Amino acid sequence: MQALLPLLGRILLAAIFLWSAIKDIREFETVSKVMGEKGIPIPGFFLLGTIVFLLLGSIALILGIKARWGAVLLILFLIPVTVIFHSPTGGEESFIQFMKNLGLIGGLCLIISNGAGPVSFDGPGPSMKK
Image (cartoon, rainbow, N blue to C red; front, side):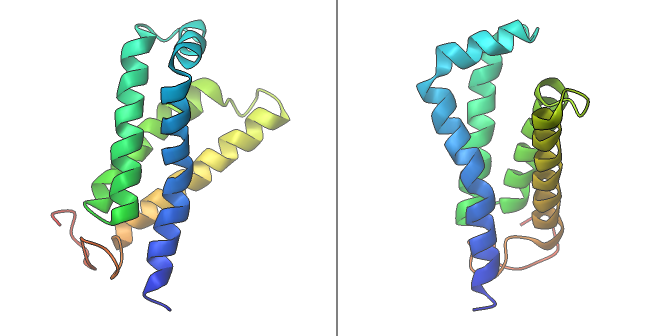
């Protein structure tokens, strides 16, 4: 059971990113428009990059293939999203989303620090070289 907990954690952590990628694909035009309204230049291009980061990162976490690098991709996605879309001073809902994103970054830092765990293609280990 202990060996399965990191797998469960990775799946649960990755689920929100995988769902977000699917939603962004299905609602590409709408999301691109919102990004443009937030001042993001070439929103379609950046949305495509976002989708790639979300898909690669979440699949890496779920399968445990280069999970540390998947976590890095997801953090690189979360930092600008958190700063641009979820201001801690933008009201209660925005603050909650801001804090949730900080929690997600914390969980991803744990994957970077501890690896994917024994039930993964990476296997256990302390090195980012895996």
